[in-house]
Length: 468
Image 1 (cartoon, helix red, strand yellow):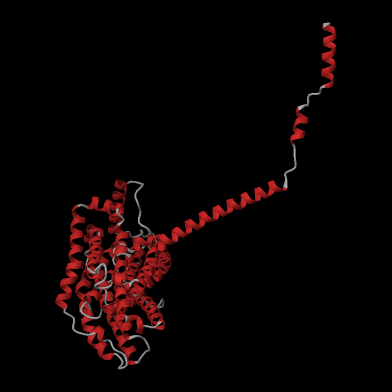
Image 2: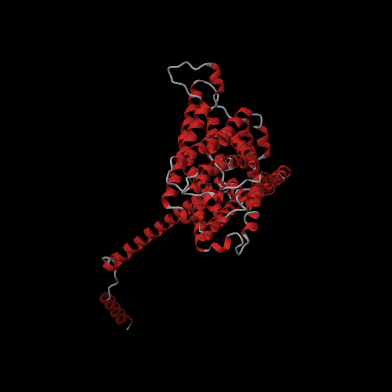
């Protein structure tokens, strides 16, 4: 019986075949279908699209970080056009107090907190350098522009008279408090000298700029063509009242900020970074632009300003900036033709390439942070809309000096680098100012206390650190 079972099992086993591993693999091999290929293609396209979105987002964010202030200017002007009742004088937010006092005080308090007093003291004794920069910025440029505008009036150029008066006021303002310092540093210039003259110029501007406008005002009004009127910009300037208001809104906050910064250097440095005071200052400046243009739109002051007038002023500003930058370069280097043997006394009068960069950026730039409050104070008793028209050339100049100045950065950086290489080849050491070493050590010391996760200001935030 057992034998019969074994035979039966063996016959069954012979009939049943167990597939080998090779046969099993053959059965599992199949040709990919059309749907599978389409899915793979769609997945690849989706991956590429996601990568493109990520790249576009990063590029957009980088552009926004760099140019957010310029975008903010556009937004402020659009808001003024659409909702002039909000930020005009006597409007919903009472801008004559909340902005034209409050915002200005905040801007210059932050300026005082940000200026490095110890570095300013170290470079204070370079009197000849400081005199040259301030002489160019507050004497040569204002009187040159004043003379050219008088000539334009005599020639009856078809440009709005108030805009031309605004061009003269823009030329009468001091240098910027931040963008010139940042661009000087980026171009390998003498940052300490730029910082010193930025602070010095804005303190001098509190007294010099109103005096210049007061001197220029009557000749400009009398030179205006008969078919146009600048009556809104005429009238005597109460110099004492102007100094009082500028002292309360500009000088006092600046001094208070400096005192706080002197006694609490490290805490203030950390607070500036943590609370992003550079961005706060820029936002306050944008509110001022918003208020100024709201007044102009509400009063209809821009009705007489044509697009061609704005374009003409923009071209004029670009020409002025280029001309005065070249003038600064000439006065700093005092060049002579190669075939003339340069006397020793002339070589001693020439500034280094690093100092020349600081002279160019501090000499040719103009400040909005001082200019707009100055125009507000000078014409506070006149038509509020006039301030918007008079401020337009200064706002245009500010935007153009940022654009042209950053183009100059690359050219000047190469020029300074060539000079350093030439000194190396001649065996002379590369000159590095003690002020720059002090600044670097201060920044390193503060950064070590703040830590690696702290916020660093954006490039444009640096350009508008106090003002702009």
